[in-house]
Length: 195
Image 1: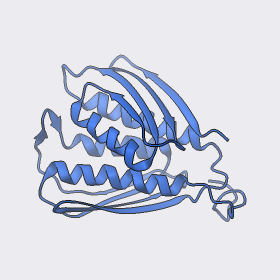
Image 2: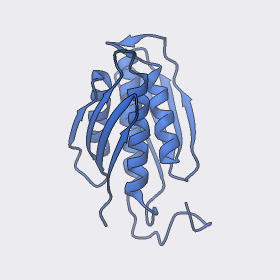
Image 3: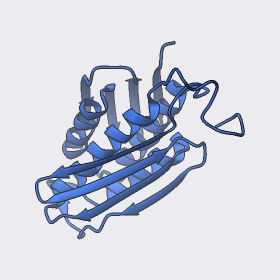
């Protein structure tokens, strides 16, 4: 079974094309016009072993908000589409990732019920031109469109770049774990028989 998806989203604010292969090798080609997000998506692909291509244009002359949020929407849609009926997947994943002085933990449940817990304290600053509060917008959009329960917790950290990088790496590793197929699982990992 091929677990791939190609999603296009065109609005008055953004034009996005994203292709995803869940069973990839970590190859990425990302061009969003948001350099810090490009960096995060490249490491997301590498650490999740997902093949990911993203081309995005947006109204970045205003700010990065629409582009960042819409990429979260499209990535969530692509993951959901690529997983199909979720037959045989582990459903749950968890990863704790250090990044120098930072420690971040992500737990995910591909339950079909979107809910984000985001315990990440960040000052209102920018990394380059990237407003760090947009990370939460990205994760919320991803959560809603993947229909997943996502918990992101940063236990400690000082460097804002390290904090967000640890979050993206932990997310990638948790999703890699949750999307893995297990031959012992008949149907879906739920007593309801549906996710």
